[in-house]
Amino acid sequence: MATNQDPEWIPLAVLSFVLILNSLFLGIAPAGPWGDTGFSLGIIGISGLAVGYVAWYRYNFKRRGLIPWVDLWEDPARSARLEMVLAFVVLSMSWTAGNILQSHLPDPTGLLLSLIGLLLLIQSAYVMLVLGPLKED
Image (cartoon, rainbow, N blue to C red; front, side, top):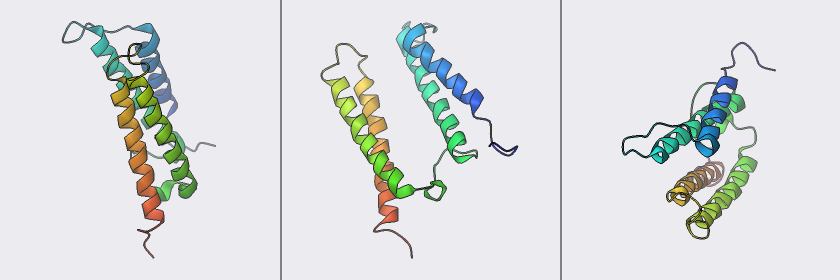
């Protein structure tokens, strides 16, 4: 149950959903600096992802912030393994988006998925190292 101390996350989650929905399906955006609405839709979609991350962080950790410190995790070893699997799933999706589905998706889709997958991979490797060989006694 939420206490009065918990930061608000529902308005951020709704805003994230609306921004991503607009970017993927509605397509309402100004022409942008090069007269291309695709650029503006991309900025709107990335903004929606960023706001969604903040909402997820506030919901999971019941505090304001952006960095999920290892001591905030309930079961860091299990979470790091799941995150590593997710990283490989996202990296395989990026390969598929950049090769097989390239003609059906915007050009930077594979690159953005690669970035997300590599960030997940780095974070999970960091957590595994902190819990294993780099653990302080």
